[in-house]
Length: 24
Image (cartoon, rainbow, N blue to C red; front, side, top):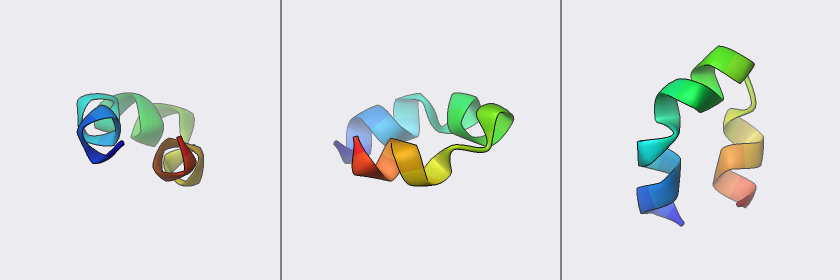
């Protein structure tokens, strides 16, 4: 989960869905 978030960290920031990233 954390790895996925880190991998898509930029995407999360770009889409501003960091919360969704952590949830996933």
